[in-house]
Image (cartoon, rainbow, N blue to C red; front, side, top):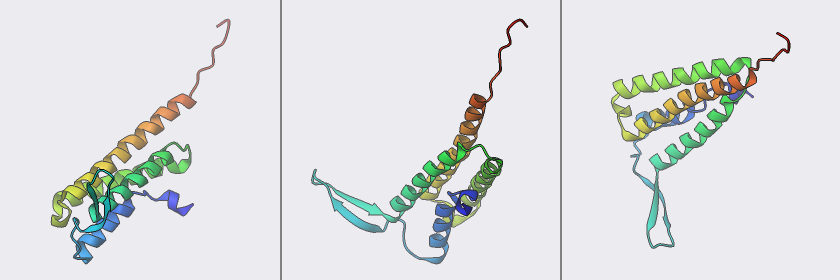
Length: 135
């Protein structure tokens, strides 16, 4: 369960940084082209694949936000740290100034806002006030 302790959106951010700084592969490189029944051709690029990974991991992050454990607050704080780190990188690092990274930044923001919202909402449901008769 070690994987549950880290913010999962750190994975696509790390992949982005590895590819941006260490490999010269352009983000618009076509990996595969799929012919569609309409006659169109759907080209899947490296950036499409990375965004898909980020969205799938966002789904798991939102599911993790529904847990009520001691670690969930730490998990929310770590997700916030990932978002702030990505925001700083987007603003200050030339290689991160792309639309792909901006979209991943929005995904991180949805994770932070959604995580806190889901936690607050589910915590409100678990709180109940008992009605006493004759009071």
